Amino acid sequence: MTSARRKAYLEAMQIDTWRRRGSPAPAPAPSTVTVPAQSAPGEAQTADWAGLERLVVECRRCALCETRRHTVFGVGDRRANWFVVGEAPGADEDRQGEPFVGRAGQLLNAMLRAIGLPRDQVFIANVLKCRPPNNRDPLAREAAACLPYLERQLALVAPRLVLVVGRIAAQNLLATDAPLAQLRGRVHRRGGAGPPIVVTYHPAYLLRTPSDKRKAWEDLKFAREVAGRG
Ligand code: URA
Image 1 (cartoon, protein in one colour):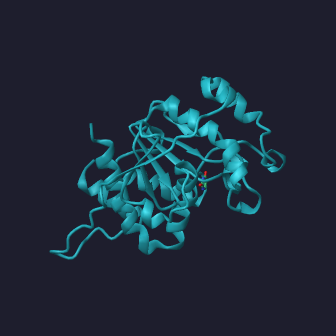
Image 2 (cartoon, rainbow, N blue to C red):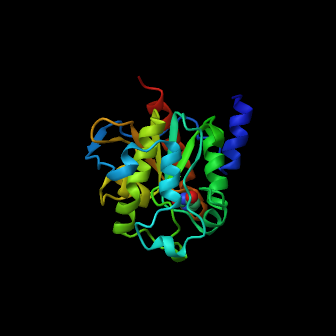
Image 3 (tube, rainbow, N blue to C red):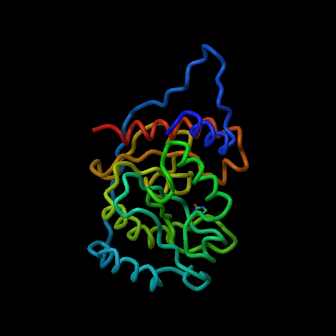
């Protein structure tokens, strides 16, 4: 990508493309954190893509199936190097059956383009496949019921990098209560074996707090560096 195009995408994220001369870029701490992997029980664990899609569309493992319009399976390149994990569908996603199609989705697309990744070259899925009413946070039992689907998606895609957006998604995927500030800037792995996991801000948060976009950009560069390792 030319520097002019990258500048255009950074501007689309509404990130200043200048830095005061002499001020160093903040470097995230490159430590690795290992968290226990949870196993995907039952049919999901061995399902192929078609079987997994059917399990999700027919899922009644929690009460969200009563209020959903559509399940939101996930979208993108099933052989992608990058797998983006969000929290849960919102109203737009519930209506369209696709993750990150609302305003937060537009910003996510801009963030991905800024590091040279068009949306169709990554795989995008949420921890929850159904919308929580009024966009409330997922309940622990909802996340536990749904996580096997995401775990199987991660196994099928086998990405080089998992980018988790937002505290809720990160806490659920990494089975931790740690705040986002502690989760950013380091490499996590589930079970010590899977792909490296990097955490950044949720684009919906960045829409509310644009001053943190610069830090999100540092996270994205860190993720790109991690994806390029080995
Ligand atoms: N927020 C998410 O976490 N996921 C979506 O799909 C949309 C908004």
